[in-house]
Length: 143
Image 1 (cartoon, rainbow, N blue to C red):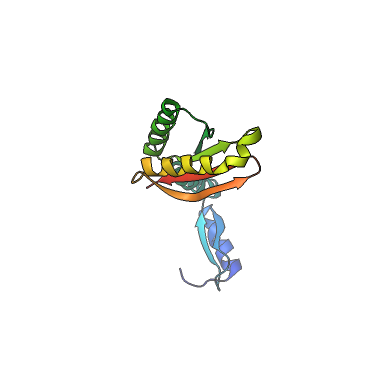
Image 2: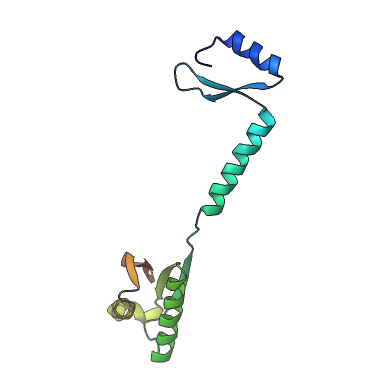
């Protein structure tokens, strides 16, 4: 309809029996449409729900390790990590130290580096191994 005054636009909307809805108020002059407000709200809600449905949620799975881990336990953790990464989840490795193990924290770092070698090509490192208190963290995501 082009540029119409506010009173004229309201008059047109009343004649048709619909509502005058302001679509984009930032533009000069503001863009308005003559629609049924209930139907407009319903369409907006549908668009919002459709966008939410297409959104993918990435979860973080945590695997806890110890510096004195046995070889079989280590292999089980690697297998779990591969499963989580293949499903598209991020994996957080937590190396927990107890007592005197803190003095040999390089053992834990070696295990985390070995994990990276075993998962090479499957993942990329988001957060490199970092010591915080009595725990060392590392986060990897699917490649």
